[in-house]
Image 1 (cartoon, rainbow, N blue to C red):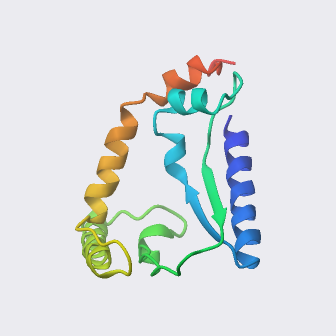
Image 2: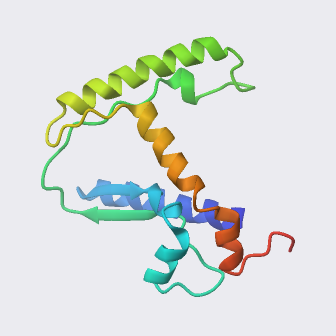
Length: 145
């Protein structure tokens, strides 16, 4: 299962690189893996023992939107071990949250008052409702095998 998920993810990133090298726009859709997995599998008429890992929209961009600010490298790259300074990480996350809030309010196109932290918590709160292990088991996966 993990090998298949990793391979699908690597294939998607290869497709993103190729599409963008051709001047196309891309939008990876990770939400596809957690949003009502059984309903989405049914809608896509997927065979048993398959499930969606991610989606990818590719097309000709109508606009060139502002790039969303990324988390600082100190939060996403760890050397030799995961960081242990929870207070410092919390402060960096609060700063990033403020940056994303400002971006959402001032970006080109549709503006929102969303902040990063509430958005992420809401995303995972919704995803937890779908009980992924049970959804995978109903799709024919047996974690004991």
